[in-house]
Length: 254
Image (cartoon, rainbow, N blue to C red; front, side):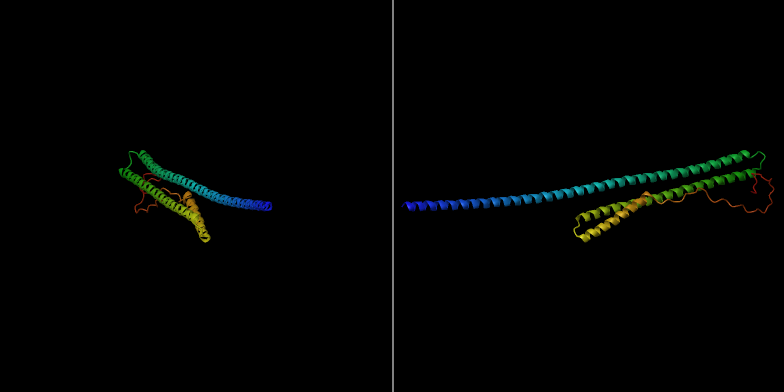
């Protein structure tokens, strides 16, 4: 009877040990499973953090590019305003110079007219005086016509320069818009061949934009405009002999 009880206790002890071993194995298995799940969660969190960081870096890059584009756009607008102001100043200067030349020509003709009137004596023939006055009047009229032609020519050149500048500005605006569109396409392109093609088109457009801006900053200069007409040719010889005193400024034979 005692041996049977001892055997039962031994069997109970073995069963208890087996249960403890199974519990330890199950506990380790659960711990390993929890650790594996924790590692998976940590890995997923690292992946999410890395993706979020890349998105933030991409957003920062795009913001920097947009800020740079806006800065270049403002600089271009300021440069265009300066070019327009310089062109307007050139127009005003050319108009003022043409008006001043016309006034100087008129003053010179008046002074010449007064000088000739002063040298005319009381004993001069009425016909000679009339001819001199007619010649002076014709000189004044011709001077006015020449001055008007000079002003008209200056205004035409200014209008042509303004039209050329406006055309260049329109081309620059179009090039800026095309460049921005190509940059947007380049940012969204995935295929390497497509990226290369868009990049080549973007480089070409940038080069074209620089050339247009260089043309706008350095417009073609025209030659100087001269005020005055052709020198009058010599008078044909008259059939009548000249009876004037040599050196007489009032002689109608001259």
